[in-house]
Structure formats: structure tokens, C-alpha cells
Image 1 (tube, helix red, strand yellow):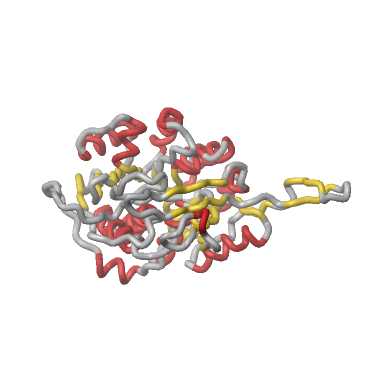
Image 2: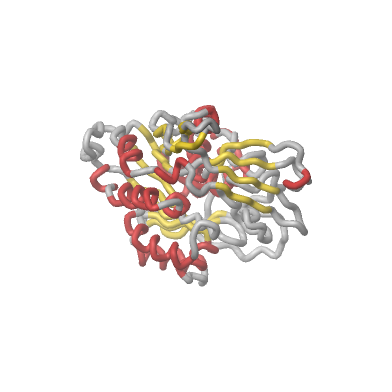
Length: 372
């Protein structure tokens, strides 16, 4: 594949992966406390693409994250948290002095934009978790194609984003459309996690948009629940994978299952299966993004079999940590990783926790955690 066709792009890609989307500040009380009773809140950087990027960078990949952040301490705090994990944030567009408000003396003071925030109230049965978002009009909603295309001039083997980013604003939708559509010209493969969020758009809105995008995606990841809700694909996992490939022609399709584990397909491997790990979750957010990171790492370094094995292991490891972004290492992933199967195992009758727990809307435990 050529990497020289994008205007100004080098003959070889600078990055393994460029990812783009919104990163918010997550506030959460300590375990067992509700938001109303909390005296203080823990702050974490959280965003589905940046969670994936941080996990991938910790495994040794060259990763750049692109977004728009406000040029003030809160925005710089987000960038510094990603840089801790080895993510390149040099392509972030810094937003400043965009809002004018009265300073109380009859004069107009200028203020930069703001990051999105959300408040997580962790729950344990019988109480579910709750999330309150405050992300409308955040700096990231102003991300235009030009912001991401500047980074793409450095070159990337894979460009990754999600349905969350597509749903944030018209500017973000245009950016996702442009980046996916330019994959041949840019010389990169595209990776896309559907990652449906009911608080951002309806299933019908998502279906209309995704049907216009997903035929430009090389590596498609979805939950079985999202495929059923958006596309009505509620049959056997193999049937869903086949239907998605048949409809959109993706090079690779990976479906994570509500009962645990995942099913993946490529023309080179055929169907592949992984089983869930038995875990006791410490934090239910971010494990799906960790799965994506392990998947992409395996594809970059080896093949789909390795990617699914690493993704399932890293997802389980992420559940043992506090915060959306995992601190796990490649060595830990390799120690935990199990071989994939080419035949599906018999359904389990056990009730052990799996690697994809409850969603941020407080539903009953499933097998893939909510992502911000």
C-alpha cells in the first residue's frame, strides 16, 4: 500500500495509528457513595478513542490522538494525562478566546471553550450505575476535517474513530465522513467501533448515518447489542458477522457478544472465537476501548487471531483498574492471552462475571463495558 498520495504525506507513515474524538473529564465518587452525598470527586480523563490510544501506546505502538481542546488548564490537563501513556498530542487544535461574556463591569471578557465532562455514580446490584453528561457544545464538537487532515499528513497505518464522534455535531460528522472517505487517497486502513450511545442519537438516526459510512471502513467492531438495535441483526453471531460484511464489505468484522467473548472474521482466517475471562470488576468503564487497542495491536504486529486474543485479555485487565484508561503492559497481555478458536464453544450455564460489564445507563451486567 502506498503512503505517499495524501498531499504532503511522507512515503512511510509516522504513526501506527491516528485516532480522533472527544476526551472528557470524568468525575466520580468513591465506591459506595452516591453523587449527592460525595464530599469530593475523583477526576479521570475519559474518551473512547483516547482510551484506546493510551492502551495501544502502552503496548508499544506509535499513536497520535487528535481533537480540539480549550487552551486553559483543564484542556492541558487532559492532554497531559494522555501524554503520560505515550500518546502524541502534538496535533491537538487548541481553542481560545471563542466565547465573550460580561466581566461585571460593563466590559466584554473573553473565555476559551470548555471540555466535555461527565459524572459517574458507580453502582452495584441491585443499584445500577448512573452517568450524567455535560458535553453539549464542548470544544471537541468544533472539530473540523482540517484538524484531522493536518495530522494525517504525517502518515498512519490505521486511522481509528467511532460512532460517538460521528454523533457529536455536524462538524464532527463531516470530519468522520471525510477521513473515512479519503482512506484510499491517504493510504491508511480505517477502523471504526459503532459504539452506540442512546444519549447522543436514536437508533434510527444512527442507522441512517452509519449506512452512509460503514462501507468506507476496513476494520469494523460492534457489540451484538448494537448490531441488533441499529440494524435489526439479532440472529446467531455468525449470521450477524456475515450480514455486516455482506452489507458493507469490510475487510475485518469483529462482534463482541452479550454473553461474553467475541467473534471475528476476515477472508484470510474465516471465523474466529474468543471466550470471556472470569473477572471481578473494579471499574466498568473503558474495557471495550481496551479490546479495540488489543485488536489493533495484533493486526499491526501479526494478524486477526492475535488481535482478538490480545483484545480479550486486555479488556479483562482493564476491568481490574480504576479509571477509563488501562495501565496494563504488553507483557501482562501476553501472559494472559489465550489462543482463539475456530469453532464456537457450547453456551455456558455459569453466572461468572465476564469481560464486558454493565453499561453507563445502569443496565444489568453484560459482557462489554460502557465507554465514554
